[in-house]
Every structure is written in C-alpha cells, then in structure tokens.
Length: 182
Image (cartoon, rainbow, N blue to C red):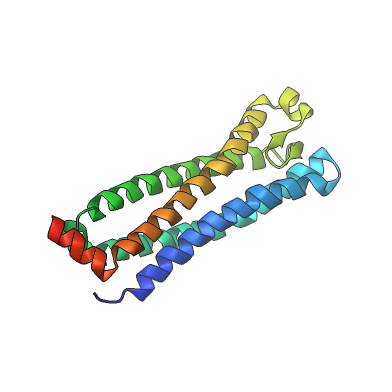
C-alpha cells in the first residue's frame, strides 16, 4: 500500500478541528457567555465567539473534504475489491453530508441571530424572555441552535469512529480477509 500522509493528515486534522471546536464551543463558549453579566452581554459574547470560529471551521471542513477525496482516490481499488469497504465509505459519505448540512444550517441560523445586533440571551443559545417577546424569529433560531450545537459534534464524532474502523480495515490481515471474501 502506498503512503498517503498528506491526504490522511488533511482528513484527520480537519475532522478533528471540526469535531473538537464545535464541541468546545457548545460546552464552553455558550456556558461561559452566560457569565458576561447581562443577557445583552451574553448574546454579544456568544455571537463574537461563534463568528470567530466560523472561518476556522470552514478551513477545517475544507481540509477534511480535500483529505477525504484524496483518501478515496488512493484507496479506490480497495473500495472496489475489499468486502465491507464500499459500505463503510458510503455510510461515511452520508454522515459527512448530514454533518455538512447541519453545519451550514447552523451558520444560517447563527447569521440570523448575529445580524439581529446581539439579541439578549440567557446562555449562548438560550433566548432571553425579552428576545422571545420582541424578536420571536431570532428566539426560534437560538432554540434551533441549542439543539444543533450537539447534533454537529454527534455527527462528526460518528465520523471519527467510522474513520477508526476504516483504519482497522487497512490492516494487512483485514485486507486479505476482505479481498478473499469478495
């Protein structure tokens, strides 16, 4: 098997940043924003943090996708010949598409919240009573973001697990068993 260090590194580092950064923002940024002192300050801090994360996340996703294509191209013969690899690749592609969709939709919602000039928030993605009363569309976006902040790390974490499984499929004993079974 040829080495594909660059594509593997782009795949793994991009996915790691996408997973870890999104999880860190959900766990730490949104909760820490609530410490800002007022609902208005909470909204401002949360929006600033997520807006700063967006270009880094976009670069991470781009690196992951470039690395994924490189890995797929490098392993196309194994995908075709080794039992189980095509199914794993298909599943991984579908989950990647779901994670991309959830991430893109979260950004659309995040821009809606951010463009509302920092609406008051109880905790990053928890709208304040004032926001619910005065800007129900923004409050609805915040509530959707409250769910999506966990969906994205769940999907990308699943991709990490599938990538580990894919790595196991590359062991010589697994390749031999998978090729002879097909």
